[in-house]
Image 1 (spheres, helix red, strand yellow):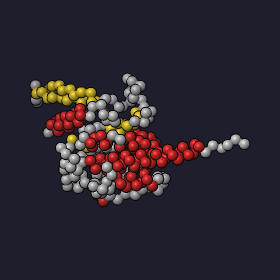
Image 2 (cartoon, one colour):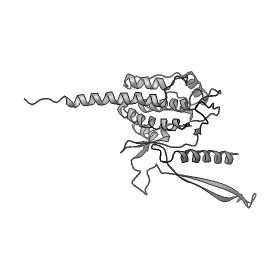
Image 3 (spheres, rainbow, N blue to C red):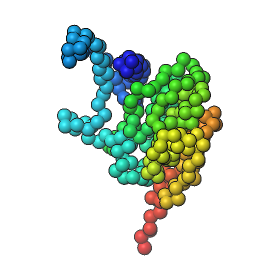
Image 4 (tube, rainbow, N blue to C red):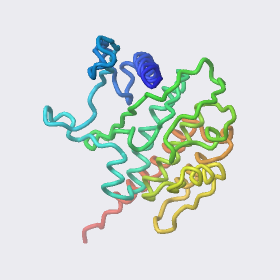
Length: 266
């Protein structure tokens, strides 16, 4: 059963990535390979053959064979390294992430596992890449109702764990809110060692904005608008992109004003 499920997930990821070839900000597919391997080497099932599937993707991990990937780091590694990412950088990284989402949602594809570990950041170019589409779903229509529980516990949305039907796209935006919160404050908004209590906190939607980190009101407003219990009231990817662009634009104006304040010569 596990083998069948694994083959289904691999083939689903292959089909999705095939449709997203040459899409910027998405992990790129190289190919899919299959081979027959013998199982039962212990003698119980001698001669039995099984199909093994290899999904080959573009590499996004630093390694010794090329210097091309030395600048790559996942956002999870970034948070572990610096603990709290300054708001200035968080907003720009988030903007690049959200810039990818509308392209997926426009094609009725939901990622369903957006998290720090599945977002690769290039420290040199500042570009981001979404990886790990194993749990993704190609919707038959925009309002298709889903029932399966997919995602990582700390990032999963309340409607997924409610046991009721839900639409997929708002779940990506909830996860994005968790990503933003965690980058800024160094902790998940909903945290507990027990999955039962963790899911209870998520379904209640109760979290606090830490007071030990200064974050501007527009950024806090985005977080609160993403971590809404009602998926219909949650920000869409396009609306989030607009709000992030406004914050970046205002910051750039302030910085340009500061640069113009030159002390005149006497």
